[in-house]
Amino acid sequence: MTLRAPPDWLGPSDDPNDAQFGDVVKPTALADADEYDAVLVGEPYDGAVIGRRGAAGAPSAIRESLAGAKAHHYEAGPVTGVGDLGDVEIPGSADGRGDAGTDAGVGEPDVAAVQEAVAETTREVHAADALPVFLGGDNSLTVPNVLPLLDGAGAVGDGVAAGAAEPSVGVVSLDAHLDCREPTDGPTSGTPYRQLFDAGLDALSVVGARHFETSTAYAEFLAGRDGTVFTPRDVRADPAGIADAAVEALGDVDQVYVSLDVDVLDGAAAPGVSAPTPGGVRTAELYELVGSLVRDGRVVGVEVVECAPPLDRDGRTVTAASRAVAHALAGVTARA
Image (cartoon, rainbow, N blue to C red; front, top):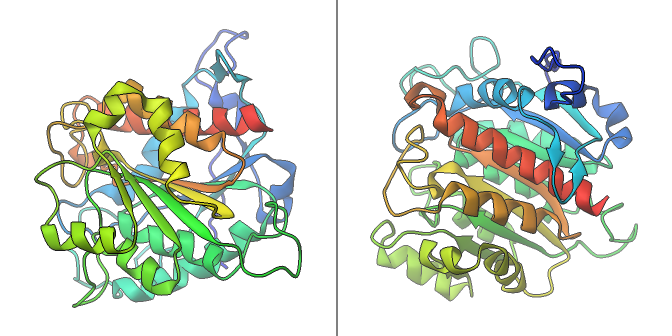
């Protein structure tokens, strides 16, 4: 298990009454994770991206943006109990951080090897008694983030008794795409749910999927697995209601994992992603979705992936991603 030491957190405001996430989030170690309600885990890797790279720089950028955000939610109250475990060390990269900007496949380990190595760390993170919020990184990281749940890691303390059968697991994916491609030439950022279904994933709901962004073959694959798709139009009518519907569509699974691919947002709101497209979810709708989802007591993990700071404009994508993390943490506070 390899985690790099977390950065120091500091709220940039000079006002002593401004409680910011920079004041609230505390660097910690895995052995002390149970002292917190939620823990941040950075995953600076983008070697599996099909489109434009840059997501390896997201963990540090999201942390910096989040540090300056006020830590108060009008319904949940002040957010507390958040630790930062640091970044997963990425094998094969020069500094262990999966630097953005290099060409995929040049001097890098294959994606499957990265997924296997990262899963060794996420297995221990899930086993700790705190809800992990993974800061990606590209969408291939969904595989090592969810795999430990499929073999029972993290089950004790999440409403599943010790010694019980492995819990059933469903994912709510907030994404413009289905990410159910076949990993014919190896895993990519487009294959995570095909891989996870093959590994035993029980159910998948996709919220925010766009018309004309998915091939019929992949839509049929998901339908054949009884997956459910909600479009941005569905979300617009009732974001909180769609959040409930997305979880309900998973059936009676024991555990729920929430994956946010930032490209679920409209391209105008989030240009700094691998594949920005128009017609997506609005930022306020995303926050309502995330907050509503995480309030469900079956949620045992959250991730934010495909935010690519080098591709951003005026910091709008990073800001949207960091505020989504804030809403997720407020959801944890609301149920604590």
